Amino acid sequence: MAATLTQERFTGPEWIFERKFDGIRLLAFKNGLDVGLFSRNRLPQNIPSVFQAIKSLPADDLILDGEITWRGGKVTYHVFDIMWLVGRDLTSLPLDARRELLSELQLTEPLERVESLDALEARDSMNGLMPWERAQREGWEGVIAKRRDSLYEHRRSPHWLKMKCEMAQELVVGGFTDPQGRRVGLGALLVGYFDGGDFVFAGKIGTGFDTKLLLDLRAQLDKLEIPKKPFTRAVGLPRVRAHWVRPEIVVQVGFIEWTVHGKLRHPRLLGVGSDKPAREVGKE
Image (tube, rainbow, N blue to C red):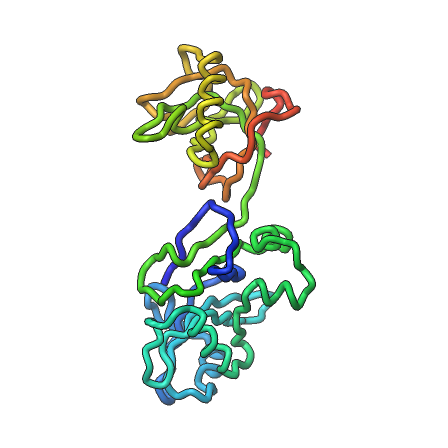
């Protein structure tokens, strides 16, 4: 079961949140004395300490799901789900029930059960922080939100969502695209930053708007429209339904990372306006 990337941030009693580990997905199979460790792509893995720990578990017949990490030479298998136990297929049980069965297994190092962030916060007195805020604060890759009633599906599921920690910076609007379908105002903002004498295209932002903001921005941008693109360094600009504007409006943008091609990955609008003049906005 794989998680679907989301840019939404939410909480609710029907969800649990777990730390997202920056490692390798690992499935562990045990049938009597036979143990198999496999990557997400079903490639066999040779990790002796994990192999021995799985072999030593009292249950003779199980399948575990988790993430393996290496930190400072220490191997840890972070177990977050169980799909099979002593002849019983658990994939049709809700997540809460699977977690309860997993909690009854006596895991020993390097096996470690993944706790919910609610449990961690109660233990560490970190109440008041949203899961993604804690992830940002502690330098995690992100968090995983899972529906408590989710069954174990062999696919990328909307019932498991991954919220990656974001980078953020100011950028300048150099154009926009027309709306499509039921969208109003505009489709996406075309944004960039200044590098010396160049205005560099950084990508398109199509999320983070409500209807009022879409209409307000379109009204502002219509007053700044110009006939030619303001970007002097640009790869991947849209060729149709694009409008160009004087680069004067500064926006705050959240995104996962810069791509190798110098574009924003999964950007979303965080806000409009800044005390900083547009010409002073560079790549941070």
